[in-house]
Length: 146
Image 1: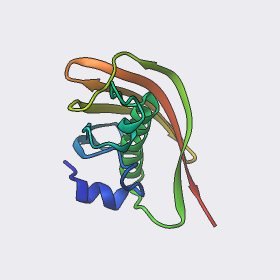
Image 2: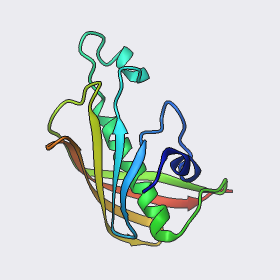
Image 3: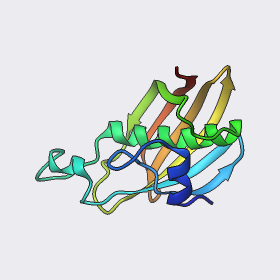
Image 4: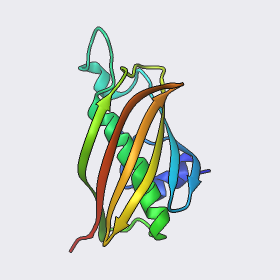
């Protein structure tokens, strides 16, 4: 539904911090399903951990937040510009269920629970195959900057 070229137009993140490779489903204002292909070339694997590479949990949350940003921008009909910032505002109920290793493909399922005055609340579940790797409720805010 959205390839990397379109994602790059919508998110300000760039390598090594862009955590969404493709969007495979987008239900306007409701939900998004996005992919992150995890490879041994990710820079964080050098130190986390050298003898047993594991994706940091906080980066799984970041991947969900980036998918949520794509959903929020789509729901609002907004485009990325230099005067708007999309902030991560809160995380509740974060749980990590399985390690994510090189070769895994993260599937982020994010649902918009509610939005008001530029504040968005999402429910996110990240899976590898049929196993849940991470789940959380996310809050994000869209703000104009001067």
